Amino acid sequence: KRRIMATICVVAIAVILIFVAWMMTIGNISATLNDDSLSIDATLMHEDVDYGDITYVEIRTDMDYGDRVGGLGNSKVLTGNFRNDEFGKYRLAVWKDVNGCIVVHTTGKTVVFNLESMNTTRAIYEDLLERIDDASMVSIQKPDLYHLHTTI
Image (cartoon, rainbow, N blue to C red):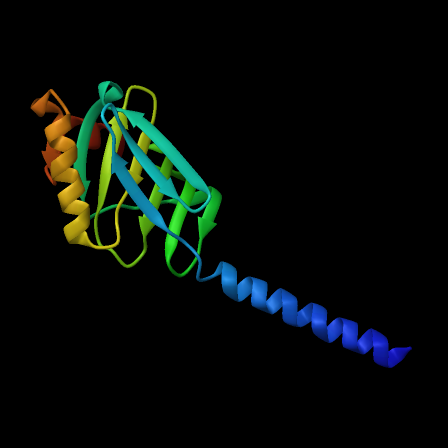
């Protein structure tokens, strides 16, 4: 009887360790520019942003992602609902080893994402700019009143 219980415990521990190892290495992020919206698909997160709802877009390398409220955070990606001092509650989908992201401000939410490299992130950023009508809502790494207001 003890041998059977010991075997069951060893198998259970092995299954748990394999599951934890798997969870620490899963993750994927992709973004698609549709006719009328930006679609971000990530592990445990999906977000559609209509171009007409976008008020401001920027590319950043100085992000403080803050704390995860719900979602996934492992050695590869951060995805889901996050909270920081700058945006409050917002949606995040980033590769941890990419030093930069796109911040999309809308009338009701903020979405932050990047792709597998800074080159692909910049490419989709530039494509996104082409799809947005009002070029005045765009900034590349410049301080603005929004950021100054939220840091004071």
